[in-house]
Every structure is written in C-alpha cells, then in structure tokens.
Length: 106
Image: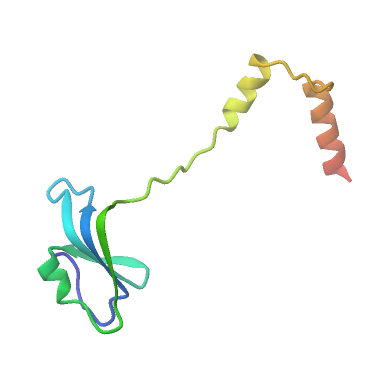
C-alpha cells in the first residue's frame, strides 16, 4: 500500500482500479483524503483506513481509472477550415473579422 497517516479518509473505492503505474498497473482499492489520492493497495490494506465517517464506494463491474484531460484546443484547425470550406451565410471572412473588431472597439 502506498500512503501515510489516516486521520480522516473521505472516500474509499473498492473494485478494479487502473493505476497507470508500470510496476502495479491494477489495484483493488483506493483511498481519498482532502480531494487527493491518499493510498492505493489491496482491499485488506485499504480497509484498515476506513472510519465511521468514510464514504465507501463499491465499484461492482465498473472500473476506476485516471481521467483523460484535453489540455489543448483546435483553434489552429479553424484557420485551416476557412480555406477548406465555403462560408455560405452571405458574409465573407473579412466581413466577420471587421464586425468582430467593430464590436470589440465599442
């Protein structure tokens, strides 16, 4: 088990846990304290951290894994789309740019 003191564990998840750690790719349980992962390990190890105020979540057939965070945008693609697609709303790109500039200037 990896973790430290167990003053107040907020949540414990039991089930299949994907860790993304090459040495220990899966775990049976995970403890959360103060909105952070506090400990990961076997059911037996993490069970020791439970208190009467700990919210226990049994995952059943669900899997707990790290979230995938999309940290970039595709703004550059919008520039490319202006040359790929025809704008059929009656205004060309320059009219839109002028209108946006005029609105921002006010």
